[in-house]
Length: 69
Image 1 (cartoon, one colour):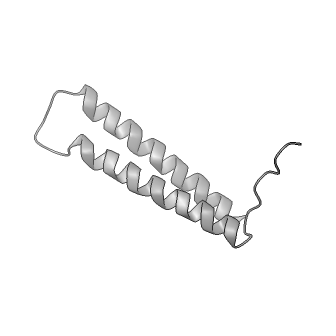
Image 2 (cartoon, rainbow, N blue to C red):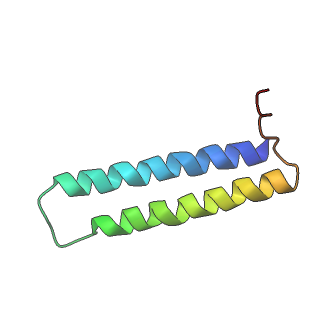
């Protein structure tokens, strides 16, 4: 159950960074935080999330859905 909560938290963090980058994209350019910082975080967290899911499936912590027959 804990692994599922971690996955949900990481997905919410990815969406949060996506919206932060979108807000910065719509604002006039300022000398401050760049949009690529948030997009880079989103990319790194997405890769870590995929690795976490693959490892959780490999170790049997979560079960993937069976393929339909």
